[in-house]
Length: 304
Image (cartoon, rainbow, N blue to C red; front, side, top):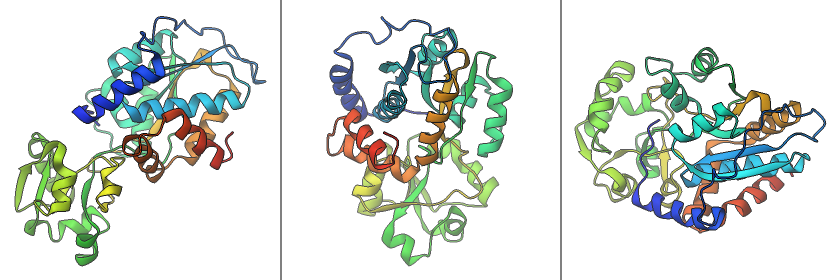
């Protein structure tokens, strides 16, 4: 999944930078955690990092607080930057754990990969990641591309999957980023035999355009809070046209032990796309503080 930060997301991220990082460089005090952690919860310091967008900051806080609850010494480095920066920090041991997205990570380390399903992508990562790095259990949660419609449209045309949509898509106008048609038109034909009446470049206004009826189908990320606010439904991609992008911890192997691994796997076992959607609404719309949202969710799920 390619992430393009919108102005709104950048604004939220900037605010989080000030509150979470005090405006300082989050890497200035990150030091390699090269010593293997012990298995009894008295581990060497685990440094949890995150990318420079709100959902990653939230996930990093969830990981950090869950580990602290198990007695692990944690240093959190939120809002660091892009994958190019963060990946190298994990590889060098400056960061121990980062919340990642499996499809996007595989595309980063293997630009020739054609893997689509979760199992194919995980196998590809195991083959292509350097020896220093590993991924833990992927969660069910994905922040992925979707084709999304209103609840009324879904009910009227009996749509729950993209396969259902393909039966009526020639009557529908679809919207998304300016590059959406170029990237996906042939893919939809190949995977689902699907064609649309018209393609419109709706960009950041896609979810609103679906609600207003300007378009009937739109490309919206599955954890976009506007799905909830606008009463929309993301259709199931049963044939993996978009590919899986499950949330998973990327780890520096020498810095994690059984306690760290089992704790993060327990978090992943509870995370769903609906969970992320709900949590991101609290942050992006209700303006809740990510560490508070993270703590509440961990408590509700028996992880604190």
